[in-house]
Image (tube, rainbow, N blue to C red; front, side, top):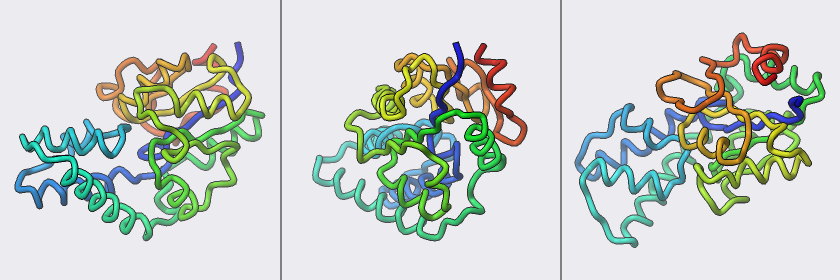
Length: 217
């Protein structure tokens, strides 16, 4: 088998938006009267805003009515959206542009597969929309990771069967989504946080298409 497509999560893989999510959730926690650490934030990576809020409230040992939860989710999103308006191409993670260009030169199709409903805003701010053949974001899917919908849709729009796809993910929920979709998985980050990935890289500074093909085969 050969690689025909690569699918990338956005937050923490292509661009460093994780800090903005963390600061937004930390503000909510502080307003509610409890501490929210960066370690706590690891549990929120790759899942939907609603699920993230539920986990946050679990950490704070709080139960709130649906209306209040909706208000908090909106406050968090407004804070986050305000923060990412300041983003620029400097926040693209090291090696990403070079690797995406190498994939293009090698004839590999590229898709974005992100749960974020703000993905297009971020891609516009960092000016790399043109590097993706297909963009699937939170506005195009109804099921959150670890459901594979976002990656299955990406593969379908690219016209590539899942077994010929490689997914790059920094979150456990995303790895499970790719696994559930029958795709090869490269974890991006620390191996202890990325169980069940086929291979783990610390970042894109040194990875090449030849290396990826060698791992995949």
